[in-house]
Image (tube, rainbow, N blue to C red; front, side, top):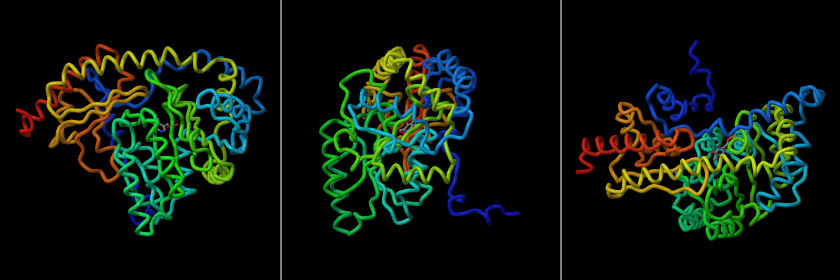
Length: 412
Ligand SMILES: *Cc1c(COP(=O)(O)O)cnc(C)c1O
């Protein structure tokens, strides 16, 4: 049987992510990887979670081992409401405003189903978070990409685009603007307060919805906390996504949609069709964990660790790359990533062959484009390798860049 003949448009459209392909190499002994985008397992509170898991299975089995409601655990809602208030100053969040999802990946998928058609336009950042792009792509919308700058989305460019769409009569097709305002994955940048305000103004002017994806907001290691778009504009304008993946453990697969009751309701109905419910056990474990431990305190050592590693990487980049003209990198104030851009003419995907030889791995910027276009940039994660490996890795990366640059006649 020729399976190709049976496949749907969606089925035909599916392909393995570049990241998965590239990460295969990272496990070869002697290699150093800046590729992985996952938290350091040593930051997971495993003993605490193990104890709670045993307890809630034995004592709360009628809940934890049973089917859950689609909306998810009410006990967790109570804890999240407190957390949202402390984290963002957001108040008034109650049961109808929260849907727990299987990671925020499912939240992205559900919102795509609820909002996007073939003729829809969705506005994303460039570079874009790959998980969001894959989820949105399933609905075949048209993408418009807005470049990121060191202080977040280029809102002037966004304004021009919106004006253009409006004059063409297409603004009604724009379903939402998707943004990762804090410590962007992959770009590492954070949207300034001024830009947050302008984004909200534009959304109001053109009557657009904003999807704010904030998995890293609590992982700030320097600088001042900035208000969430949700806090600035309220639930009429913004749907907020959050997740335990980067602040507790991704293994629990707990994400959430926070927003207007009618939007949350639609997403809940879509979730019912997708998987009935997310695991009650995981949600109750998280609820009891938050009840017993102060997440902000628990996060402190992890944030310290990431900050130290980030500083080591910044210093190494300065030492190795300052002498190459036209190289730019982002100094992130939190999160897990920096974004290194090489001079014009470099193609970080093509260069990956040399990186493989020298056993240093990164994610080429091409992986974070909508149209698979060539990129001079790469995503570097500092969270997993030990400090001495970060220094050694940046040295190897420099050697890769120099060799590639010479071969292509890009540097002297
Ligand atoms: C890691 C990450 C997520 C989290 O995905 P989960 O499905 O919750 O594990 C969401 N958005 C962005 C931008 C991320 O980097």
